[in-house]
Image (cartoon, one colour):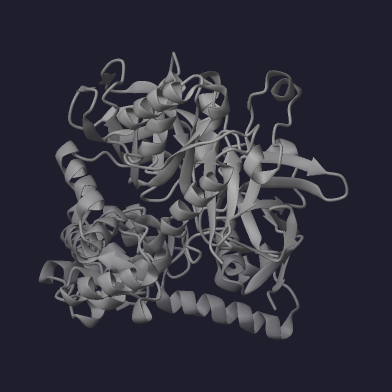
Length: 627
């Protein structure tokens, strides 16, 4: 069964449901808040009705209700004709790309036939060149019932031609009402824009990322187990307070949608906008049921003239959640008048500054390019973080088959690389991977030039020199890839260029022998490295390099800061202490002094080192075996 949403102002004669809830609405006979009802068409289609305020003072509320509608019934009173707010409503629907609709010419019983014909002609003229050009104009009367069967038939005809919503897409329900029901708790309502929502589903409320689980669902007042795109839906959310949620929030499944304070988009300024839009103008941004204050950054000009279109960067003062191709409307900050709107191209643009020309080219491809071109742009924008298929579907608004086909095409031409076994970790653009690999090789070459005697650079130190976006998993995968290609070598925790072979010169070998002799002779009472260096009378930088190499090779072992032992004496240190524990249950500083013929200057650091390597552990003034 098909489901769709109809936007209108006034529907009681068709549905039999009075949606005016406020006392002021009853007294004044106008809608101030959004109202909701449903209508079953003769062919079985179930239509949700969103009753939006028609008065010009409540256009903000009207905007909260008109998002997500499939067709519009433009209500024009025969005794008033086309009003200023009629034109604004028409502009808003056009900006949101509502494609179908009709005109209900109400109160037709109150005017003469000649007047009715004149008003009808004015309507036809007003609608020329709009999405309602040539649509049915149905005279009717809610009081007498005149024309209502014809109106119902016209609605059915338009509904049959409306494009169905995507039930397989991302679950998304912009919140338009939130209230509490005694015994059940918090309930939100809204139009399910896409996807399928079921009882028991874990859900998130953005932008605050509140979490809950669907306890109950209602569609058109009936309790259901599942709601699908195109249905007016009420969702019971336990564990959340009414005060935590507001109109403009979005319900989704966790991790499928992300809120952002910046969007890249197209923007069209209405031809009858009262003035040009200046760069960085503060405006009111309407998306779904939300209103946010925002700044419009024009990317290629300082002013946008009425009737012109441009690529823009939107900076919101509070975050909102969107998907590519979402339509939005902007109103001037003051007075609040509808001046334009457009389409979201990138709901999570990169944070780094980008050259304007490249940014515009990027957005042009997102707007006009083929699915493969758009996906390639998104991979480039993802930088050094592999993008998963789900992320690419969300950011491109492409269906799974189109994403799979595009990724296949990109990998076949070498523009994309699968990360991990069978691409389980995601996809990187080949250009970004090449940048990473080039950076790795440059960092290693730089390290070898600075430390020619060292075997290699520690893995974590190397990763710290690469872009912060790079995850440990992607880093490890890339090292394995470069190792397999024979470009680098990884030994233990060290990485080096495959061609790098540290060798000592004759002078360096001589220094090494002198240092080793000094430490062998010192046994358990070595001088500090600086003390050893002073006795060698060699170039300090060279001596330090040889010394570090000896530490890396394990010839010298660091016990504590400035205390190093030759590896033979270090081995004796461990063996004597372990042998001591064969006969004694503990050891202390005095015993260490006697065992090794040293002062407290060495005995205490030796014991602390043995604690660090888990040979001993401290108990008061004594040390006992660690295990």
